[in-house]
Amino acid sequence: MKTAVVVFPGSNCDRDVAVALEKITGTAPIMVWHAETDMPAVDLIVLPGGFSYGDYLRSGAMAAHSPIMREVRRRADAGAHVLGVCNGFQALTESHLLPGALMRNAGLKFVHRWVELEAVATDTPFTGRYRAGQIIRMPIAHGEGNYFADKGTLDRLEQEGRIVLRYHGDNPNGSARAIAGIRNDRGNVIGLMPHPERAIEPLLGSVDGRAFFESALEALGG
Image 1 (cartoon, rainbow, N blue to C red):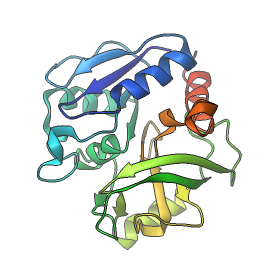
Image 2 (cartoon, one colour):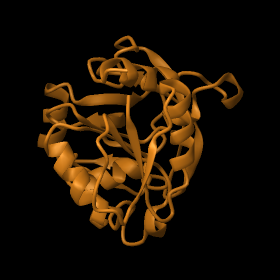
Image 3 (cartoon, rainbow, N blue to C red):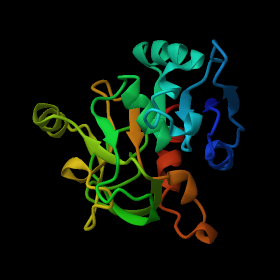
Image 4 (cartoon, rainbow, N blue to C red):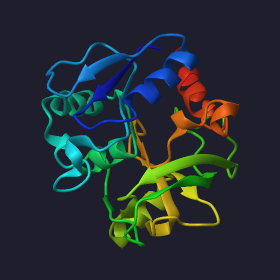
């Protein structure tokens, strides 16, 4: 599986996700600088976590207007698989590749801890190795992870099976309907606030994130 990781000024999880991808796929991803205008032929494009452009304006707002994002949008519209983690999820909503918005956490504080999540949609390229309803453990680290959308959009996400992950038990940021991750209507663009790349080895505290990348490896052709 060929992958690319977009690197924005202020990204701090690009290397984390690159390590995870290489460990699980056996191939190092191509690191693509935000100012590039072309994307190599890959099976998966990842927008990593961090604080792109220092989170000025809104988290992900400036990243959404980076030169490379025009190509990411074009590839996504053509059916390419795109994953946004944390700040990457924020950039996907700001780019209108995913609906809704990520607002300040309900407690108005940065939250950095492990959370339990329910695997809701298990028919995505990233969740095929989870069982529906399975409780998994991953870390979060964000100040603006409070997912918001109007009632019609939330109902549509529910009805169309587009909620990928929910917070289980404790909602750490006030996210509507405890949403932790969603997908687009075609299923090729997924955004989530938790960090699966930080849960791939026992030394890190959990291996529950491995299945996320192993599912992608299996679904996207190895």
